[in-house]
Length: 325
Image: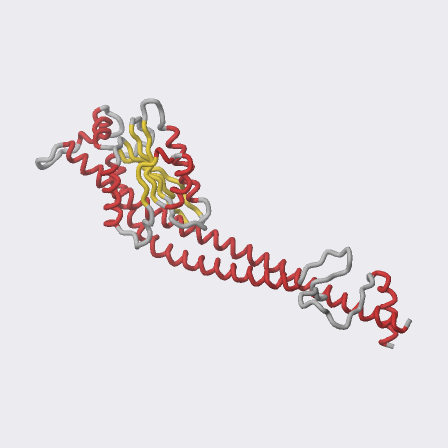
C-alpha cells in the first residue's frame, strides 16, 4: 500500500520535474551537489551559504553584546566624576556669567569629540554646531579658529577647514581622566592660541539615551573687564572688594585661566559619559538587529533544507515510477 501511494505521488509530480542525466560517479571534485542545485526556474540558495552567514551574524552579535557591557562598565566609572565636576564651573558661571552672544574679534571654537567610533551621532552633532559657530563669528574684521580634541572631529573638520585649525589633540582618553591632565591640556591651549572668547562645544550627559549638545563660553580678561565697565551682565564685578596686592587685571587673568581649566574638565567628562551612553545604545540596537537577522536566516535555512529534501524525494519517486514504466 505504501509503495502504491509513493508511485501515485511520483506520477503526479513527474511532469513538474525536468529530466536530468543519471551518472554513477561525478568526475569533477567541485561538481555541484543536490544542496547547490534546484529545479530549473526556481530561485534556490545553498544551505552552506546560509550556514556561513548565520555563523557570521552570531559572531557579530557576540561582539556587539561584549562592547555594550564594556561601555556600561566605563560609563559607571566616569559618570561619578562628571557629576562631581559640575560643582567646579558653576561658581564661575554665577560670577562671570556665560555670554555666548558676546561680540569679539578673535574667537576660538574648542570642539570635543571621541577618538573611537561606533557611538551614534554625537561626534557629527558637535562638528555641525562648531561649523555653525564658526560661520556666525566669521567676518571681514573677525577671526575664528578651531582647537580640536579627538580623532573623529579631526577627521571631519580637516577636510574643509584645514586652514582654520590652530591645534589638534588626540588620545585624550587613553589614560583615566583627571583634573591634572586636563589642566595641563588647558594651559597648552592658552599658550598656543590667542583669543577674545573660547567657545567649548561638547555633549552634556543626561542619561544613557539622552545627551544635549552644549556650548560654554570663556572670555579673556580684557573682554571681561570691558563688559564689566560697560555695565552689562558683568557689571556686578565692581561690587566685590579685592584683597592683597594684586590688581584687578591680574585677578581676572587668574580667574579666566582657572575657569577655562574647570570648564574643560567638566566638558571632557560630560562628553566621555555621552560617548559611552551612545555606544551602549548603538550596540544594543546592533545586537537586536543581529538577532532579527538571525531569525530570518534560520527561517531561510529551514525552508531551503526542507525544499532540498522534498526535491530529492520527488526525484526518487519519479525514478522508481519511470523504471516500473
